[in-house]
Image 1: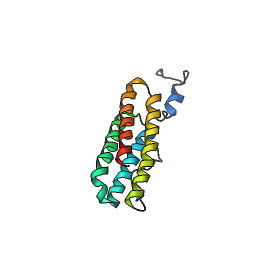
Image 2 (image 1 turned 90 degrees about the vertical axis):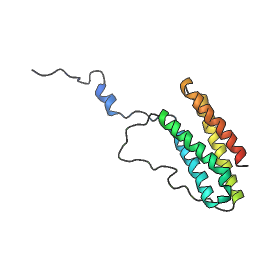
Image 3 (image 1 turned 30 degrees about the horizontal axis):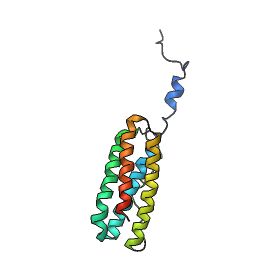
Image 4 (image 1 turned 30 degrees about the vertical axis):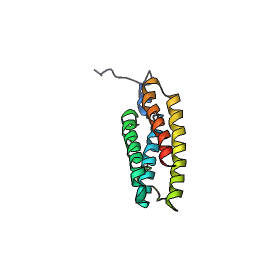
Length: 143
């Protein structure tokens, strides 16, 4: 006798063959890691900014940790994308120019976090609202 098994009549095989869609919050996670890396690179280049920027970098790392728990990631494939925070480019110029670049990155980050919060289902909105609020305060730190 032959065991009865799924024959793909209802599309089961096709569904298993297709990887799940990337989580819509995956870009926000990558952005949090990138922002943390940018702040850390600025601290390395300009240690005088450490007291000011270290808490911001830590906040971005905490956001990344929270988003990692929330984001459904697809199964790893053969071509893994590199971590955007792995080797942030060192800031050029002086501390003032570096703060201006960080301000621009934080403004972009605030916009993306706000948009993600507005588009998110209720169970994700609280975390995203918190991230957006934190990024708004980061703008004041990098003035």
